Length: 431
Image (cartoon, rainbow, N blue to C red; front, side):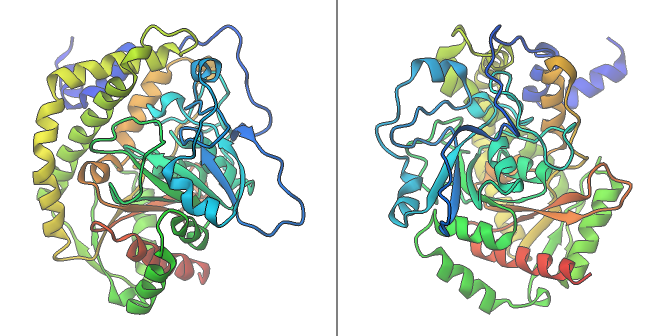
C-alpha cells in the first residue's frame, strides 16, 4: 500500500474504514417490495378528509399498538407480531388525539446514514431525486418535505434526524439524551446515544412536534422567545471545520449575520476536540449496531450491507468501544466550558452537498462511509446535548437550493435552540 493511502486509512474512524473496506456492495433479497410513490411510508393510514388535526408520521422503529415494527427490515416484517403497546414517546400524541398518518421508511435497523433501503426501496429526495434522502430517518424527512405529514418523529443516534433533515431541506431537532423516553423504540446504542425527536417543515411545526414529546414544552418555548426576542441577545460560537465546502461556510455565515447574533469564533483547540469526539461517537454508534443486532448476522432477508455493518461493529466493540466510553465525560466537560462563554454553537450539518444515489446498489458501503466523514452530527450525540438542523439558502452554484445550519445547545436547551432557529428563519424571509 502506498504511504499516502496509509495516511488516509489512519485518519478514518474505524466504523467508516470498516464500511469502506468490507461493504462495497449490497446483495438484496431476490424478491423485493419496493414501495410506490415517494416511498416515505412502510405502512400508511388513509388521511381523514375535513380533519384539522395535526398529522403525525412515526418512524418505523417506534412501536405503535397493532402494527408490526419493521425497523426497516423485511426480516422483522416476516417474523414479528404487531406491537402490543405504544412506545412511551407516543403518550402525549395519543392523549391529544392527533392524526397518525403512517409508519415511515428508514435504513434497515437504523444503522446507516444514507437513508437507503434495499427491500422497501429508498425514499425519494424531494429536492433532487438523484440524491440520497439521508438516514436513518429518511421516510420521516420525505413525508414532511412532501406535505404528507405536518410533523414526524425520528430517532437520532449519530445524526439520524439531522442528516435527513439536511438532505431533504426540512427542520430536525435532536433532543437531550434521556429527556424523552426511548422505551418501545428499537435500539441502536441506547446506553449512551439513542434519542427521539421531532421533524417539521419549519420551526413552528417542529416546536409543535416537540410539544408532543415533552409535557409543557410550549410554555418553555414561549418563555425562551420572551427572554431573547432578537438575535443580538444571543452569543453564538462559530465552529469552522476543515474540509467544509466554502459555499456552505459562506451560507452559514450569511444566515447568522442576517439573524444579528453576537458571533464568537471558536479556536483550533476546540476544533481538534470536536474531531476527536466525532471519532469516538462513531465508534460507539458502530459498536451499538453489533450490541443491538448481533443475533441477526445470519438471518435471512437481512441485507448483506446490514450484516456487514453488524459484524464490523463487533470489531469496534472489542477494540475501541471502552476507550471511547471512558472519554465521554471529558468531552461533555469540554462542551460545558464552551457554553460558559456562548449560548449556542453554530456549524454546518453536512460539510458537503448530499451525495448522489449509487447505481444498482453498488458501492453503498463506500457511500455510507463518506457520509460518516461529512456529517457534523455525532459529537453532539456523544455529549448528549440537543441540536437543531434547519435549511438555509445557498449559492445557485450548489447542487441543491438549500444547505443546513446546525445549532448546538447546552443540555435541555431545546426551547432556546428553536427560538434561535426562529430568528434565523424570520430574518431570511425578509431578504
